[in-house]
Amino acid sequence: MHGLGELEGKVMDVLWGADRPLRVRDVLEHLDTARPLAYTTVMTVLDNLHGKGWVHRERDGRAYAYLPARSREEAGAQLLREVLESSGNAERVLLHFAESATERESELLRKVFGEDR
Image 1 (cartoon, one colour):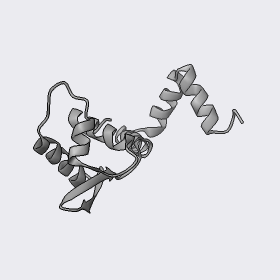
Image 2: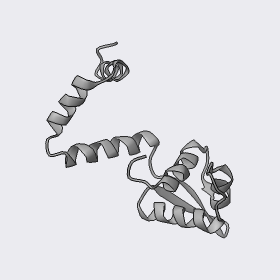
Image 3: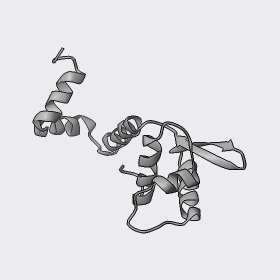
């Protein structure tokens, strides 16, 4: 996910795929990384994500349990908004996207705007 480091993105993938808040050890067990990670590394990443507003945390005994602050889709929409706002001309960016969209992207746009219903 744009706006996150590689390990932060992998941690968010684990949290987005979970059906409950996860402790650091749970996240560590589910991470798919090329090399083993230390518990403290994952704890630091989760603390950083909390500080950036990507995750919420709640006390679970003596530890914290973490959950995403927003869904993957909501995070993607926010990033898209930020790109459009920083582009200098959101209208032209959107028009260029629409003109260069793949068939699948065009289908999705028609569906969202009700032309396929």
